[in-house]
Every structure is written in structure tokens, then in C-alpha cells.
Length: 203
Length: 203
Image 1 (cartoon, rainbow over the protein chains, first blue to last red):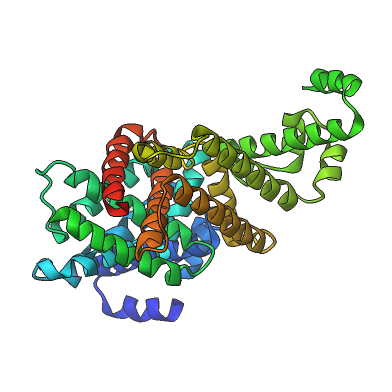
Image 2: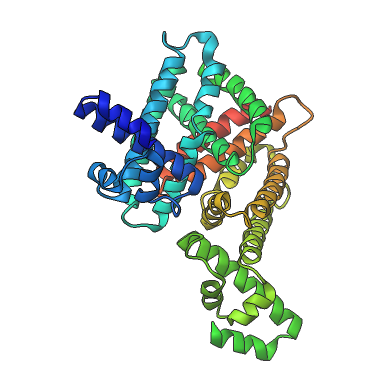
């Protein structure tokens, strides 16, 4: 990574270099959190993984809390964009089961694992708790918005809002079940069945 | 607690005293895990909370992993018994929504919080991981069995098994959403709506 950043240093204007450094730090922070948990994730470890000096890392993110909450938010935004990109014309009527599968996929990868480590750490750390609570609410609202849009769910109908919320809760629970073991073989028929039920419920 | 254990010491036969000590340790371990997380939960902290000497604690549970996996298992069993006791005649047709609410309640209290801390710690600790994986599978099977029974779900019908599994995944996700904030006001209408969907799906 050191060599790569030197090459970038030769080619890119200063503002772009700074943005690229920031992005590398955010991606390294999420990977680090997913792999080593909160206890194993410090600014130094992330800076080294990103091939950035500790000083440069602290210039971008003065505290450990700044770095890791920004990282989870950044990756959540990237995943939201990727989810919308799967259905560039908006989802069609026949896409609903594919949409449910894509929504569940948001919770079974490294981002969810990283976010989970951050949530659990926030239970016991006063400095982290209010920031993670606020972040979780914001990311949750945005994910709900995308789900409603891609499922073409009419929230003016009674029960529809709660149906979509329950689906996202189920997705989170499926993510948790995937934490220690590869749960795919159990998960896929569950998702297929609830996609059928949901399709009927949303009309 | 020291005074209480002396009184017990005067009154109870040795085997009962030992069982009472074990039980106090298990309950203290779950409370400790729920409040302070894995990093803050050691055998010494639990022994002190339970009013038991460290030596006595180690006699019952030679390692930290022994103590905390036994604690989560013990409390999960107690909760299963309490759940069955809510519907002593078995659940009736009209009880289904109450059953769903009771199943979700399994995941919103201190036991779930403790189990979550243990799961997340097990991601990064090789000594803990296989034991927690095995424990999670065992407790999950037992909870599924109770859910099927109380919901009077006929698993020989296609999709019914997956429907119940998805419900338990949703319950776990609702537990996670309750971790940092009191999520009850959002949760209750979601549970009511999914209980309706489930009732229709199970027939």
C-alpha cells in the first residue's frame, strides 16, 4: 500500500489525494472492525492497514470514535448506492423476491459484522453510545426508504409500514445468525418463503 | 450475599448448598455479561457479585469459558420453562398473537444482551467460538421446537418450517434493535402486524 500511495502521490492533485487517503482509511477501518472486533481496532492498526501514517490518519479522524463511526456510515452509503444500482430502472413487479434477497444481503457481509461490533462496543462505552445510536437510526431510516421504494410498498395502506419494518428486522436477525457460521443453506429457503408471504401481503 | 450464604450454610445439606452456589454464579454471570460485556466479565467479578469465593467459583467452573457458556445455557433453559409455563394447557387457536409477543420477548431482555456479548466475543476468540457455536445451535433448536408447539404449526406442510424460522429471525433482529435504545414503541406495532401475517400463513 505504501508503494501505491507514492504512485498516487505523483499523479493526483492534493485534494484528490486527501480524498483517496480518507477513503482508504474508511475501508480499512470497516475491514479491521469486521475481522478483529472493537478491542482489536485502533487508529494505528487501521492506519497501517491503509498504508497511511498515524499522523495523517489523525488529521482525517481526530479520535477513534470519529474514524469508526465515519467508516460504518461511509460503507453503509456505498452499500445503499450498490443496492439501488441493482435495480437501475426501479424494481418491477416481478422483482420483489430478488429485492428481498438483496435487502437481506445487506446484513450478511462484512459491513454488518463491523456495525455489530460497533453496536455491542457502544453498549459499554459512553463516548461511543450516543454517536452509534444516532448513526444506527440514520442508516436504518435510509435503508427503510430504499426498501419501501424497491418493494413498491404503499405505506399509506394500514400495516404496510410495519410489514416492511418487520422484514428489515428479519434481515438483521438473519445477519446475526450468520455471525459464527455460514448460515446460507438455512437462510435461503427462509428468505424465499418470506418473500412469498411478503409479496402476498403487499399486494 | 455473604450473610445469606452463611444462613444457607447452616440450613441446607451440602449438595443443596453446592447447587445453590452454582445457580447464584450462573445468574450473576449472565447479569454481568449483559451489563459489562465480555471484556468486563471475569470469573472474579462474577464470584464477587454472587458472594462466592474465587476458589469456590473455580471449583464449579474451571475456566471463564465454562462459566459463561454454562450461564447462557442455564438462563436460556429457565426462559424456555417460563415460556411454556405461560401457556400451561398448550396454546389455543386465539393465543397465536400472544405467543408471537412472548417469543419476541425472549430476545429483548438481559439474556439476549448477554448472549449477544458472548457471540460477538466468540468471533475473535478461538477458545470460545466452537463452544458458543454449539450452544447457539442447541438453544436455537429448542426455541424453534417450543415455537412450533405453541404456534400449533404443522411442519409437514410446505413452507411452514421456514415461516417459523423467519419469525424467530425477526425476533432476533428486534432484539438487536433494542440494544442501544428502548425500541418498544416501534416494536409493538411491528410484532402485531407480523403476528397477523403469520396467523394467516399458518392457517
